[in-house]
Image 1 (cartoon, protein in one colour):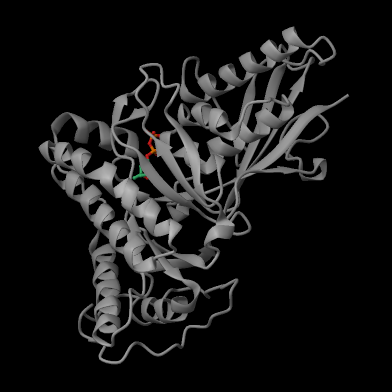
Image 2: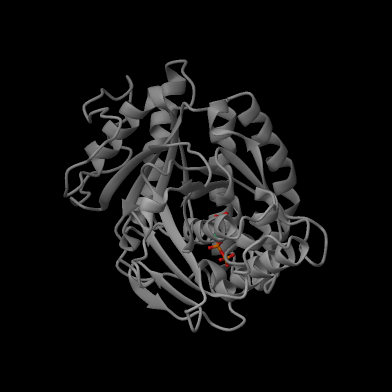
Length: 395
Ligand code: DP6
C-alpha cells in the first residue's frame, strides 16, 4: 500500500501588504493583509508527500534538489504540526492506518523559474500543507490549515484559498486566530487579470524576513501605517464586493507606495524598486491620467513586493492597452506567450503623453511578461501526477 498525495497551490499577490511581525517565531503579523490568488493554470507549486514504513528519515526535494529540514525550522514546524493532527485522528479512530509515525518523503516543484524573482515560498508552503492534509485525510478546515502554512511563511497562509483572501492578524498570543479566510471566491470577479512584469535585477536584495524585522525595529513611519491599514482592509473589501476597479486600484497603489515608503524609512533604508520599476509606475499613472482626461476610469493598478517586479492588475477589457504600453516602452528579448492572445498592438489612449516614461529603455529591462487572472485555491491532484518514483525519490 502506497500512502501518498499530490496537491498544487497558487501564487498570491497582496494588495494590502503584510510587512512586519509581532511574533517572529509563530509568524504573527503587525497588520492584517489581503491578496489576490493567481491562476494555477499559469503559476503553481506542486507537491507530493509520501509516508512509508521503510523511510529512515523525513526528506524533502525542491525542484529536484534535496533541502535540509532543519530541526525547529519553519518546514520542520509545519510537518510536525500536521503529523500531530494525524496522530490525534489515529488515536480517535481505530480503523485509520497508522501512518502518522512513518517518515515522509516530500517533493515539490514550481512551474515558474525561481530566477523570475517571483516569491515561490507562498505557493510552495501552501502546496506542502495541502498535500500533507490530503495524505493524512485531515478534517481541519482550510482556515485551520492556513495557520500551519503561516508558520512556514506568513504570506503562504493566503495561498490556501482562491479568489480574494484576507489574513486576519488576530489577537491571541498563541496565534490561534491569525489565519486566512476567503473574502470572495474567484467566480465573484473573474474579470480581474494580472500582468507580471519580470524586471531584471542582478543583485540579490534584502529578504522579506530580514527587511520587515528591520522596519519593525527602526521605522517610525510604520506606526502610522499600522493606524491606516485597518480602514484600508475594510475599504478594499467593499471595493471587491462591488467589483469597483477604480477604488480597488486606488487602494492597491496607495498601499504598495506606503509599503515601499516604510522600507525607505527603515535604518538602513531598504530599496526594492529600481529605475525600471519607477518607470512602470509612471507609465501606469499616465495611462490612468489620460483615461481620466477622456472621462474614463482607472486603466490599471500597480503593486510591488520585496523586489523590482511589477504586478499590474486590470479588468480584462483594459489588458490589451496595458500590454501594448508595457511592450512599447519595455520590449522584451523573448517572445510573449500570452495565454489570452490579446496581442501587443492596441492603441494607447488619446492624449497619452509619450514622453512621460522617457525613452532609452534597453531591450530586456523588463525580461518577461506573465499574463494571468484570478484563480482558485489548492487542488488535490490525481496519483498520476506524483513527483516521486517507486523508490520514493523525485522522478
Ligand atoms: C512584501 O511571507 O515572504 O510579499 O513571513 O518572513 O516568510 P515571511 O515573509 P513573506 O513576506 C511577504 C512580504 C510581501 C507582502 C505580502 O505578500 O503581503
